[in-house]
Length: 158
Image 1 (tube, rainbow, N blue to C red):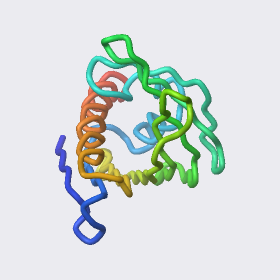
Image 2: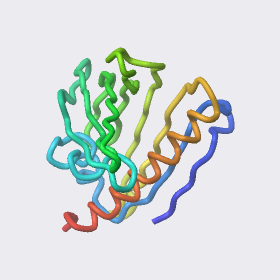
Image 3: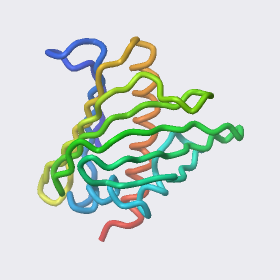
Image 4: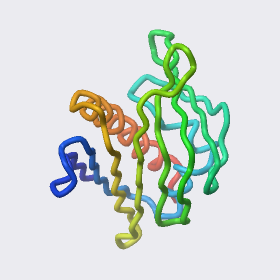
């Protein structure tokens, strides 16, 4: 697997781009993002678990997920699916909830999936972050999630 994280050159430093090559068919990688049974297995940094509270992976559909940290704290994230084009593209909003339950700053996530001779080239783009620290923190968390996704796909891939 190859991994590359960068600020998108033409887009600006408040954007995150990660590319990964997964040794799994594109349809399976797409389902790992869109099927609740798959989604329960890989999101979140190392040591975290995830529980979907609400999940409607259709254009206009809402999701709300809790990431459970190893120290017992819960981190809630929510958003709306803007585009769902199986098995090629997902676009959704992403906002962490504050302690009051209200969403914080919202970003837009675009994930594309390209077949590469039976493997899947995934391009992840998230923007616009309110700070470089937020971008970098998300980059660290997403990369750990994608490491977990790679391990999960190795378990379930034909």
